[in-house]
Image (tube, rainbow over the protein chains, first blue to last red):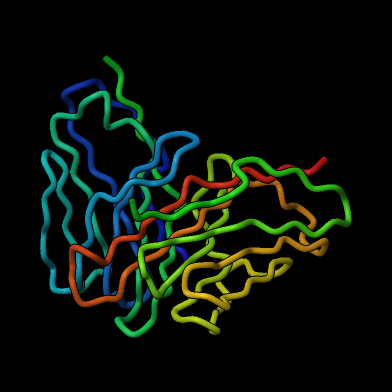
Length: 111
Length: 116
């Protein structure tokens, strides 16, 4: 099943913060985060494994709450380059390569 | 340079016609994937393959077929049974699990398929 992302879209002014959520109804092994610009391939941001770890990548970080099967992506002090559609992808177990993506969150940063 | 190559970039299909999208990788990855993306929509999994000569249906496999005769290649055929094939198709590959930093998907640049 597809993970559920929220919000579907958000508009921010440059320098503001945002949180994007990804939820699954099933137990997860890992959560991936990617960003896609229009007409291009998705670009990898980070992977989180079950265990509740938080990872960071410049001003973009993420957490994974194993009990809630929910991951959140945090964008701090957003820049114009952060604009795009953010997708989370989920895997249910280590032994299977099936990776299912959510419907995406469109982020627009305005000056 | 290693990478994943999709061709063609644009493809047009006539009604009742089968068309094949190419996906080739020289990264020595075992796992390969096909995703479909409709305008403003997420990525939906069509098929995936964990190893040569083996593949599994994803969430929207009806009207599509694949083969995995070689590790490097994972072509997708859009058959005439797929009544609404217009979409952006993305192929991806992934190295074996075990190294966290290596578990990401490597995407091709995509093929835009349209119906004439």
